Length: 250
Image (cartoon, rainbow, N blue to C red; front, side, top):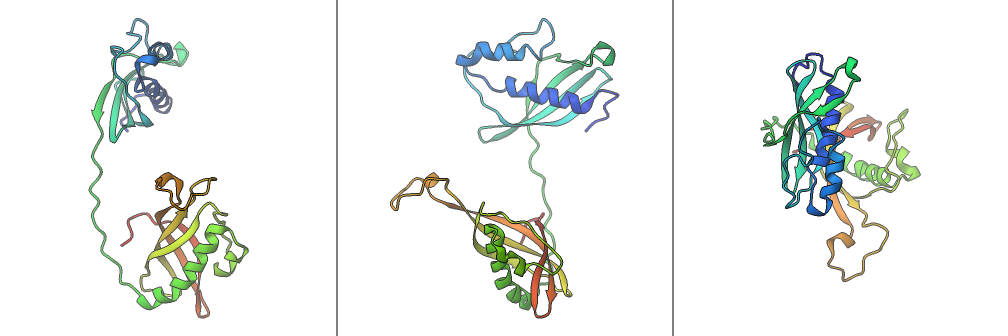
């Protein structure tokens, strides 16, 4: 984010994102309604359709404030990220701020511009850790039991949790469908490990028929990665904490 020169960045970015939600969604049937909605954002004398000729259509989702470049306490160009179809794009919005003496109001003060979004960052690979295969073999049945009860919310979850710890569960949101991978680095009785879990995703309230071919009508699977703190107590491993894994496992 650029230096804001006293321009109220957070409020300005929220204003620009709300404007983008109206500006980036249009079709001929909704032209009059869109014009009325845009009026709440536009400086006096601006085109009520903001350059749209009334033909064609566009739909935008995942609209979020992204960046701001303020030239002084009253003027800024605010970038908003959005998704349309398969494309991730940016919308640049010129915004004017009246200042506290002017009631603390905002207005779109010029024509927006759509720009390509930055490409994904190039993520360098991490050196793989030294793996403890024996500990992974010991952990596998414990983690399978843990994730089964972690998904269902069964009372038996606590038998897989380290003494003195308590963990919440999904309480039936997902069903455990398998443990795809465990990464267990060498270490002592307490270790940070990573696990890739397959969850069965429910298909809703309507049970599928045996011969259905509709993908939306049957349950699916979703792979997710977790980082767990495990502790060895006696001859067994127990889970002390669970979090998102962060970087890609394996």
